[in-house]
Image 1: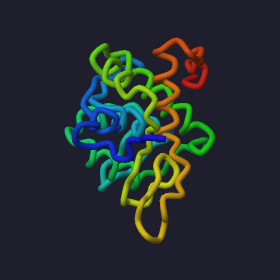
Image 2: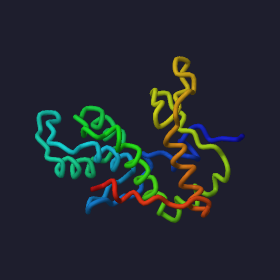
Image 3: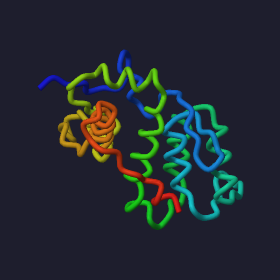
Length: 168
């Protein structure tokens, strides 16, 4: 089977860092990465000596220009207690929102039946598959699977799942 195993270059639109506006609860995030990290916070936070309420934190994340910086911030926070149960739901929602953009949905459809693998070197074996010698490409590739599911939904092959219930 043919595949795409890196979300850069020609395939950078598949990356969660790719710029696309995602609006959730009145806040406009500049990428899926921004949206996803903002959802990690449900409690007050102290980050770099600054106190944030959950709403303040989400606004701060939305205004942070770099998705790379946002990702690093997300690694420093005290994540919500239900994060492990909710993170895939948030990722699913964010990716679906991203591909409501007509140009991006067309690009995703143009990947045809290629297997989508979020290949990486930073040891993300949950959303991707790290190709370093230690990890050996044995990741779960949840982001790739979500992208392929969304592609199938855009083709009308699979029925969309309403995820609004998870944002209560």
